[in-house]
Length: 233
Image (tube, rainbow, N blue to C red; front, side):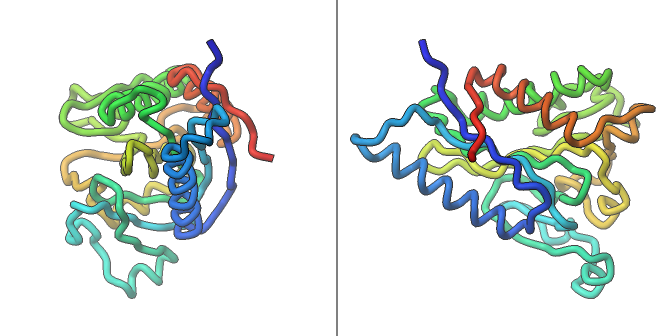
């Protein structure tokens, strides 16, 4: 049986709004193909990797109060702010953070939303384990966490927030590889006031490059979702 195909692109450092608009166009394309009985090229969606300049985003149900600065301070620290159409509360994106946007046809993959998020977490957990970073899931919260059983030490290394329309996903995950964690001090990350944030370069003595993490995470996503990734040339 042939594996479903996912088109992979690395956008590099890209403006957040530009990447958001691109995701919307890809989602529209995948939905259109779903609804067309004459279109079945074997593709089940797209996987986008990128970085963003400093930006804060807040989901549909997020609280504005979790952004702890005003417009003048945003300008001072060189950050943008967007209220967007994913789930979840506020998070930060910036250079040194690996952001992934899977635009997947969950129906073709035979996945519900909860299982889809679980598999995303699993691919990231397996990737971090390869670098001897022991992590897992925290009950009642999405994403990937360290020391999840210790209330005083628990901290998030990867945030996840998605939107699903007509069983097609968008938005995704943000893995802190070499992130400037100071930017998290201006928000209540994901709405939490009692949990910390960390990054790979804070947790291990010889942190990998972003390119190393991309290569391994691509492989884990392909394996966990049982898809074949092909480059968009």
